[in-house]
Image (tube, rainbow, N blue to C red; front, top):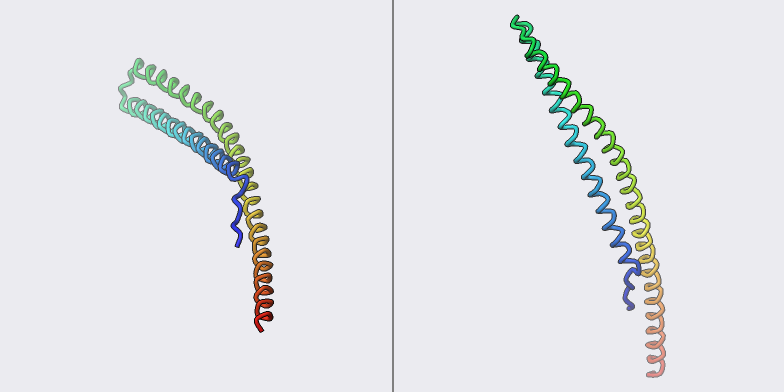
Length: 152
């Protein structure tokens, strides 16, 4: 019985798989960056809410310190600027996520094409080997039949 030939494009298939893994890793890093920015934004918004709550409590208690309130407003403006900066970074990161997601889709498509080609060639080769095996078995059967006739 003949052996199955190795897939001629195995190296290319391996390269495509590595590219796909690399693109998936890059996409994961972009998602991680988005998560970190979202966490920073949530932390900053909590800090703003806490500062506003502190200012409201001071105003309710009747002890209004103008310098303290001005400082709170400056701090709030600073925190709002941080939120704006984070939002701008999030826009950039989300665009990068879309680019990287498309790269993963494309790399996956290229990998799947080669993988299907490999499977198709393997099936074709197995079919050819089966045909060859049948022919060889037929030849062996004919030779045995001829030998048996000559013995008699």
